[in-house]
Image 1: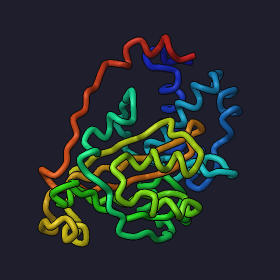
Image 2: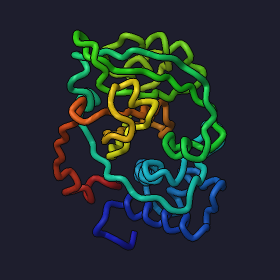
Image 3: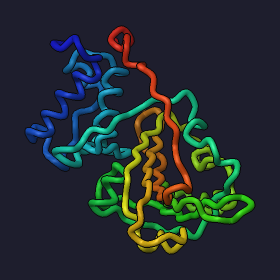
Length: 251
């Protein structure tokens, strides 16, 4: 690879990002298979898989079972991605709360929802809506929509009154293991419908957190979209300089 200042996967990802921007791979088209791309770039399959995850995290492409990797948009803003040692680190206070499921319905992803789910427009998902409440005080601290495959329709009942993270029940129901979580948190205005459930003014400041749970092959198994009012829920994140020496890790 020409650029030695970056890990190999980052150089490959940068090249693919430019190719998508130039419409070498047009929106709606399929990228070549991973093995073919790995041979083209002269890198290992693991390196190629890491590069593809960057594109998925950015929302440039989505992976569809039985089809391949589909180009979704030509341009996207890159996200800052961190790694944690355990998924439990993302949910330090769940034991003091429980999820109350409000209902579940099958939805078809339009353009906006497809960006949230990192999928192709027109895909069907099961949307499970719930409120997380303080266990004793019963005050609602956040509102979430959990998106999973329609085949997991029984998951709605399983998640009700749960205090543990939803992904643990997902793994049991699907028989698949979550290997990676991409989390993005943004300041947002509280939607009117959610504000009413959380007993806060519509349009008031909110923390919106979207998490995408993926298997080892990069397939997204579950997406959660959560709104929390100020003071109701927060996150403390520790970042370490894990990029140092990354060049020696990539092969």
